[in-house]
Length: 354
Image (tube, rainbow, N blue to C red; front, side, top):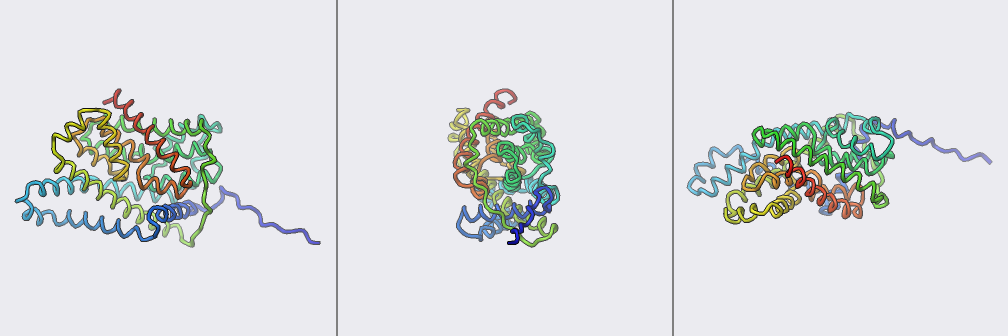
């Protein structure tokens, strides 16, 4: 009887570069399905982005109608100013993230990593400077690394570091805080500390069995089509969250009584917890969150730092993406632990640098 012929196994490092973009799109699709049970979520983001663009363009004409209402005029001014400042960095970050996801080989990071996981964790964290990406890109890239045999703790370190310490984010932070380089240094230090501590902690806990990688689905798109699709998807989603974040920040600045803000800001721990929870809920993209944080000037600098450290590490959209990429059981353990580590890192670094 003839022996059974077997198809040779595909060599993972030789897979086309566009595979990473396909995995990324699959992860987003699954995250969207987990989050709302349908695949029409993009339209809400489009609507929010259109609202913001319309308010920006109509600001000169709207001003004559709302100037009689001082509070509404102030709200509109704060809302539009945050959007105008943040939008260029948001677009730059989204385009850069899409280019890296489509054109950079999926195994590029593994070439730089030491073989020992303990040493590979900080290297993976620092690689966020070389291979930056927003939160929407870092989750599927980390999933791709795990599927290629990289230790999960190392891949998760990259997942946390890349959106938080990349050059676009650091420059946007410097612009938002008017050249206060101590805030830029504090953000870099606290975010990198969060990523490395989480990597070592996950390595120590040995919870890799919680990760359930889904089966990969492929599409027939070419590299350019993947790049355009990735950039469009990120811009619509991130733009929508920027609208929400700007609106909430403007509302806090205008409508919340000063006495309430003074009470919250009077306690460092309370103010840190408030802005950390705020970051989780509004889920502003890391390229734009510094402008929202800077607008919340009633709060102490350490609380503003906590907002910028927690946001790129754990928020509602990241939880959905992590659940779709690594499994819901993983996300329910990883997200709360990351939240606590990020707050502790912000408090520690803020006490030294701010």
